[in-house]
Amino acid sequence: MVFGGRLTSLQHAAALLKEDNKEQAITLLQELAKKTDTKEPALRQLLRLALAEQRWKEAKNYVVCLQQLNPSSREYRQVITDIGEHLGDFTFICAGYERYLQCHDTDDTAHFNCGYYARKATRPEIAIRHFERALELGIEDPHEVHLNLALVYSDLLLDPETAQQWLGKALELKPDYVDALFNLAAIKEFAGDKCAAKQLFEQVLTIDAQHPLALSRLADLEKFNTESAHNYVTRCQDVMTKMPAQLRCDLHYSCGKALDDAKLYKQAWRHYYQANSLNKQSLAPFNVASLERIEQNIFARAEHISQLAAQDSPSVQPIIICGMFRSGSTLLEQILGASGCIQAGGELEFVHRQLFELSNKPIQLLNKAGTPGFAHAYDDLLVSVAKGHGWVTDKRPENYLYIDILKQLYPGLKVIWTQRDIRDNALSAYFQRLGPSLNYATDLDNIRHMYEHQQRLKAHWHQQYGNDIMTVEYEQLVAQPEQVLTTLFSQLGIQYDGEAERFHNQRSHVRTASVWQVRKPLYSSSVGRFEHYKEAILAQRAFPYFSELL
View 1: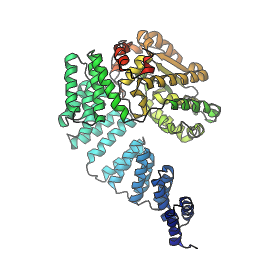
View 2: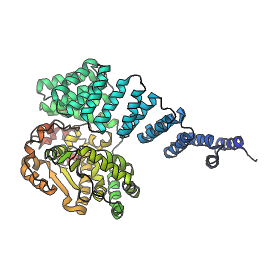
View 3: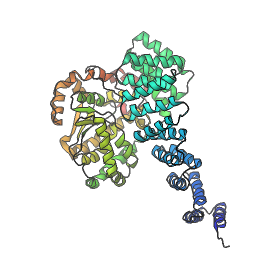
View 4: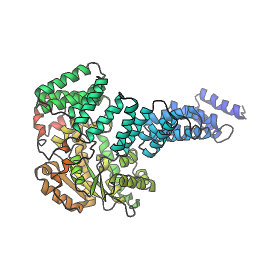
C-alpha cells in the first residue's frame, strides 16, 4: 500500500502503532517532524509516546519544539510544567513560562508561576522580575507575591532585611497570614532574636493550633527542665493524634530535644528513634554501594582536571568549609566571620546544584564546570555574598565532592575540614531532620558509612593538595581554641585576634540547626554526649555497624 500526503502519512504511523510496530512508527514520525506541514502533529504523537513510556529527556525535547512552534499554547506550557515537576527541573519549567509570556505578557498568574519556579530554580533576578510584573498587573491576592519575594531575598539573596520588608507588606494586607508570620519568625530565629521568634511562632499557633512546624520550632527556643519537657511532650502528643505520619515526624524530633534537655535520655531516645523511623519512610533508601561509585568517578576526573582554566584575578577568594553535617562547621564559620576580613557565606547551593546530577559522568561534569557561564556565575555569587570582603566562606558540606574543580578554578583555595568524634557526630545528625538529600542521617549505620566515605576522600584530597586541606578537630577547638585557631588563621594568612572570645556576639543570620549553639561562647558539654545514649542504642539492636564503636 502506498501512502502519500499529510493525513495518510500520519494515518500510516497510527496504523503502525496499532499493529504494535512502534519502532517503525517512531522512525516515520521523526521523519514527518522534519516537514513543515506535518511537524506539529508528528511531534505531538512523539510526545505522547515518550510520556507514556516515561522517556523524560525525549519528552522534554519534543515539548520544547512544540512550544517553539506555538508559544501561546497553554497546553504545551502545562506539559512542560508537569514534566519539570516530575523531574524536579524547575529551570526547565521557568524557561517554558518565559516563552509563553512572550505572547501573554498581561497574564498575571503566569508571571507569578514563572517567578515561583524561578525561585525554585535559584534564579533570583528572574523571580523578582516576574513577581514585580504580577504586582504591576494587579494580581489577585498580592500578599502571596509579597511572601514569595520575601523568600527570594531571604533564601537566595541572603538579604533578611529586605525579606522582612516584603513580609511586612504581606501582613499589612493579611494580618493573620500564617505563612508570612512563620517565615518572619524564622528570620528572627536565624538572627538570634529568641524573644521575637517565640512570640511569632506562638502567634502562628494561636491562628492554627495544628501547625506542626511552629510547634516544633518552639523546642529550639527553650531550655527544658523535667516539668516543662513533659508539658511540651503532652502538648505535642495532643496535636500528633490528628496528624499524618510525616507531620508527626518533626514533633518527635522536638520531643526528643525537650527530653534531652531534661536529661531524660531513655525517653528522648524513644522519640528520636520514632522520628527517624517515620522520616525514613518518606525517603529514598540509602545506597551504601553508591559511595564507592562516587569515589571512583572522582578518581577518574584526575587525568582530565587540567582542562579547567583558573579564574583570572578573582575579585574574592572562597574558603571552603566541609565535613560531616553537625561536625562544627557552622561554629568555625562564625569564628572566621568575626575576624573582619572574612564574610560568612553560609551553605551556598550553587556548586552542588549545578554539578551533582553529573557526579557519575566525570567528563560531562568537567565540561560543565569548564564553561565560562559556570565559573562566572559562581564568582558573581561569591562577590554578592562577600559584601566587599576579600574572602568568603562557602560551607555547603557536599563541596567535598568538588574540591579538585574548585582548586582548579581558584588555585589559592583553602579547604577547612571540620571533624568530630563520629559517635557524637552521628547522634547529633540523627537527632535532626536534615532533609531528603541526607537520607543516610536516619540510620546510625549509614552515618558511619558516610563518615568513612568522606574520610577516604579527605585523604585523597590531602594527597593531592597537601597543606591546603586543613583539619579542625571539634574537641580540640573547644578545649584549646587559641592554640587551634592561631595555627588555622596563620595558614589562611590572617592574624588571630581572639575571635573565639567574641564570635557569639555577632548579629549575623545563621540558617542551620546550629543557630543557637553559635550564639553561646565555646562550650564542651557536647563532647562525649553519646555516653548518655549508649545503653539505649545497644538495647535497640538496630544498628550493629555503629554499635561496634560503642
